[in-house]
Image 1 (spheres, rainbow, N blue to C red):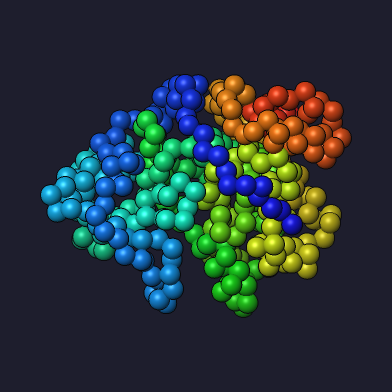
Image 2: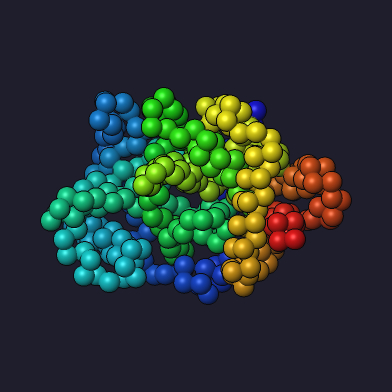
Length: 339
């Protein structure tokens, strides 16, 4: 069973990472920042359709500044979704701004609604944490998913990642007669491998969603991470393997029932091959981000020492022992895939 050591330290964005974000168009000027959203005057608990507490609070702002704040938040949405084209705002309005009071960085979630057809979308405004930014960038470069995010000073803007929360899926969908257990188990094996190779930790059922895509013959599943705070942070190898979290037991049991060891190794090799292809296609960006990570402080030295020792033992490769930072450990992990 995987256990997080302590509450994660929040690391500020350093000069190296800031330079990378500027070079690749992630650093943009935005009209409103995270700390300004903290000026709300009141809040109420947000409940779901079944009257269950969501642990989010809907916040309210003083009438005197509400209109200006709404306009600025809509401009951020235009930057995130349309490259700053303000014409997309004509039929949009802000239905709600929610605050996650229990989250590590206490993010705000904005619900945008199209008044013509009532279609809605979400995006998030957060305190920028270097670990999370590295995680988002690596997700965009190394996973099968593209992801949109922007940074300015100490504010991070993220798009919403659609899907059924892992905990909800395992509670409500595992007994669905239309469930394809073999395909779902295969996707969990591949997700497990993706997380381990790129050292994304803490992928228990509350930190990923499952996207279901019906096809003309079968149903496809994609497991997507939604929390990137634990990118290259923990020292325990097991934290980077979703298979060790008890919250994921339903998916783990599915794999034990439907996946043979031979099939599991095949799926692992398939995923590593796909990652190797992405390494080649995004070589310049990955080299730049890895150089930046190698010179950045992303975890206590005790975590670095523990992880390099555990991975050296796991892979039977002593060259991990020479690593002095989480960035160097990640480079070594990815180099094994590239070979």
